[in-house]
Image (tube, rainbow, N blue to C red; front, side):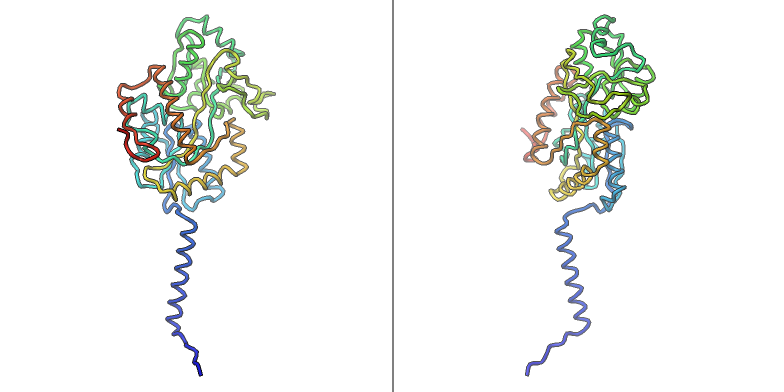
Length: 358
């Protein structure tokens, strides 16, 4: 007669505990990596600008909808045309609890300042959208169309028209150089700390023109303080809802249709620190995917008239390589390149292999 084998209660508890631990380990492995400390989202620009507004919106959505167990904290590090923020993230190798929202200074700042930084020094996560540029004037300005601006540029003494922009030798000043070419004259470029300051300077009449992103001046347009004239893109903005009076973003003509051959889009993307693992990148990709799936994100895109394009992985890297080449040409033509910029570019790490180019 076979006897049933009884297990001692303590041994039974030990077996149960071991089984539970194994189950939890498998669940954790299936779930993948996730932050174990607060995550810092660096903005390499001042407050109130397009990058700052998007970063703070992402922070609000993550907090409101409890999309992450750890806090997401936004920190502005705008020193030296954003180099402060870029170098901060570069120096945090191996720390997966730090992100950065990027704009065109990802390319222009190293080229203009000679800062030892290349976008390949940090880890691409995801393109969130592309940001447009709009030609703005004060609401009391006599300029009612892009043609009026061009006519004034032709007629006015060189340097008498002031264009306010974010930083020096950055995207706003690049566009100002292209405007000068179209108008066959010289503008006085007024560098300001961030997009919010630029919009306020135009509303106060301190400058005559700006090329702010839509979201940076949208509130002042609604309030009747500033007026958009055209968009620096090959097609009109695809947003038909009324913004101010009877005008929508879609009502703005392209600047190109008025003989201003300028088309420029700016990256709004998320990167993390050097050495991030595929699991860590995948976590942030899915987190940002949850943000983009929210109805509030659609409203945010509408408000800022963004071009909705999202990329990750190899397609994002390909886009970054093309954008870097494009900015190198623009910076060289504008004579904004630092003397050592080409040397630094030759030493930039390869995005594909992580090695150094010889």
